[in-house]
Amino acid sequence: PKVTIIISPRERFSFTQQNLESIYEHTQIPFELIYVDGGSPAPVQQYLQTQAHARGFKLIRTEQYLAPNQARNLAIPHVKTEFLLFVDNDVLVSPEWLDRLLQ
Image (cartoon, rainbow, N blue to C red):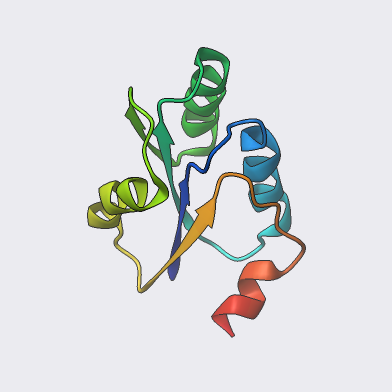
């Protein structure tokens, strides 16, 4: 993969599942994913752990809430690709979104 997508928390966790599913549904090119979970509630934490295991992405968890830049800074040392892209956990993507950004 040429790109790593870093997902970081925003003010809410209610779109976590929709966010992650939209990325996997609408991203056809290979990518690495790092998800930073800053103090999410137990059901969200369990969902992310299950998805990380099933899909093979890196999950970084802290017990306290993180500001977006704090979360991004935790993930950056784990990036091994040429490009990185920050996505908040309340963003829903559309088909070919990453292809267009890389072009």
